Image 1: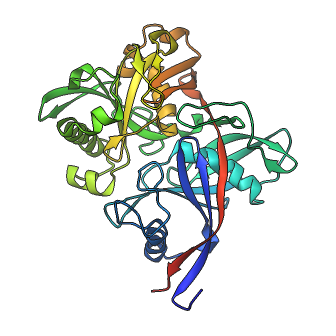
Image 2: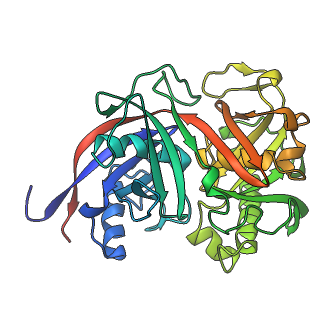
Image 3: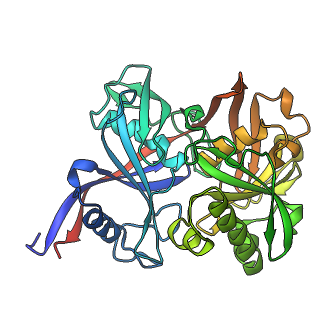
Length: 378
């Protein structure tokens, strides 16, 4: 190491179907501008290849977790999520990532922030982006987070120890309202005419539209969606306009430039047979309760985001929403099966006395690398 470089401790972890750089808060400058400049260099951003950094040149691997001691009285750990842009010198801190959240509990245990209690350690995670508490139930053994297990999640090879993530405490995460507009369905004007949308705020705000209303079936693959420039433009137009509607941006231009990740937008359809693009195997209509394709950073999420899962599950249980209407037998379901491009994700969702009482799903996580990342002193 020369005087031109400094090294910063770093851990790369997979959480669910995403990967992130995990950094400790005390290893970064307190000044936000200086901190973010270092983080951008760690990732190699902005550069679509992120060739001069650790970023994986994909929205699902250009993610950041900053972890430190809890500042909330009901939490064990503080966790800040960042979505690092590949095309601009910008980090979006406007929401959270449920997949990366599932790696925070194991990280906190293995780094000594939280004492392990076999066989399961409950970690109360204060997500600073939303100010909400997430609950992670982490299998532990010999004072460490377990890695091996028989839990299989679609979109990740092999199996791992099952981590249950409960997001029921995150209702109104960005807007302080489960239904930010107070209605299960709103009508917005778009370049293609008026469209029905449902906006729900759990974990992260999400916008839902009917697949048929935008000329889709809900069975599309990532390639089909990401190569359809007209569809991408329409979905971003809808997302940006709803971002303004719920007060997360002053105008649509700012919504696209400064809040590109959140809210997320999805189009949904009734259950049907479709092909898992990762295996080419057919997923039968009977295996899912409905279909959903969720966008992230203006492209299709190749699986399904964790926070989006919690929000979708909650939306399914709210009468009148577009998600609720897509599932004829929803009232009898305790576990909802979402058909996504790479398989199925299950979500336990329930309301009690008008409050969200359960929004839990299973994830796996593991540490991939630990060491030092080098950044320029300049």
